[in-house]
Length: 253
Image 1 (spheres, helix red, strand yellow):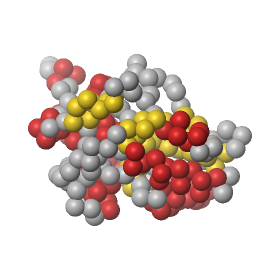
Image 2: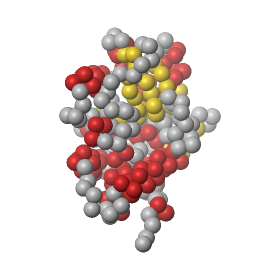
Image 3: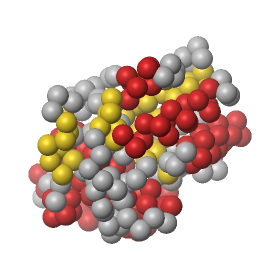
């Protein structure tokens, strides 16, 4: 069998810790992030390349807006600007991304048991609505840019599938480490928690953040949201725990 990388083993152990964090849904509405940042004359950039055939939706819960404004203002003092690559994800987007990583993991580890493949894929994309911070409008994926739009060295590319993506990876350069530490420090200063195995993923008020910060419960859970209609559905506890169906991706021989 192909050996499971140590960083994936650590991530699987970490994930099992926050899966059971309870939720007390706040029912906060969503805000269009590019608009509110622009109104405050805060410079930030947004990646608009479709992902998995779906357009990206830069909407977040209202409670994330002021902290993100503060983060952007603080980083600007260092000549740095936030570059957003994801915010809210629909059920369909999250499922498609999870399916992608399941397929990729099957290819990379063809002799591993199904249960372990699903856990490994879950490190890169939530396996059910309960653990999908993006589906709750509670997470943003961010990197950094200089004023001229060039990328800040963070030691790895966004979505890189390697040990380099672990936030505290010892394998990156000293300058990249310093850049990550600055981003991590500023995001934490204004309430955000970092998923330790993706240097770009930050959340506030979801299960991961509650687990890391020692909060008794999360306040943002998965919802069905459309910009034209707002929130139309809050997932029940049963719906949240239902793992995305991916049986069709496994073939028997």
